[in-house]
Image 1 (cartoon, helix red, strand yellow):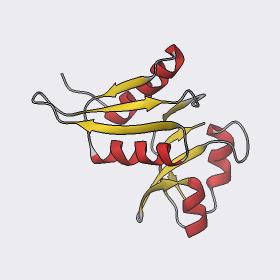
Image 2 (cartoon, one colour):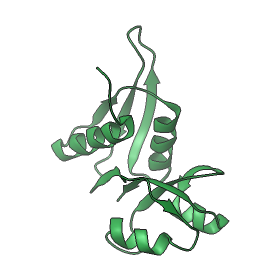
Image 3 (tube, helix red, strand yellow):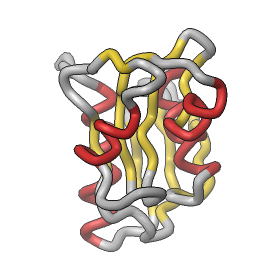
Length: 130
């Protein structure tokens, strides 16, 4: 079976596990982008530690959930955003100013909207979390 969007599947698994009050979540398939997104969420204390488990039938990631996510998801289509347009998309996807993060893919790597604003670069929106 082929997945259409592994990033969207990852975020919906995390969101569903959070709603059910589970302590951990298994994420399959594993990619470097998914690991980077989970690292950003871990740095902002939305999720706990995660680790990749090597398994003969394919690797998977176990994520410890802290119960701090109200909502998370991917942004489709992946809007191109200039360095001055973050405000518009923060109003659209986040509930309040300074509450939550937008995850942006830039030429300098994947980072949050605050880091991209600080560095003065734009990119493409990938996901949001609050």
